[in-house]
Image (cartoon, rainbow, N blue to C red; front, side, top):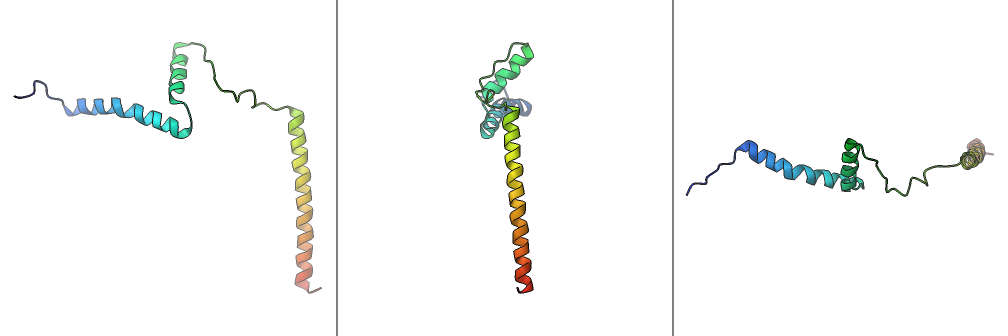
Length: 101
């Protein structure tokens, strides 16, 4: 018996992409280390205008105090000065060795 309906190439293409696109999206989100399902929920909630609640625990750890940053900057500058002095000493030593003294 002949099949009652024949599937066209366009219909096959659409069915393929209905299955293929979500697999690729979730695979790429997993590869980037994101939660693909949560990203989709956030996107649809943004469209509907609902409040978006974040589940990230890193948000409180991302802020720094100015004093802490200033201390880190001062420490880095001191280390840079020390390293520059060491480089100058090594260059003098190299010059002395080249001159044969």
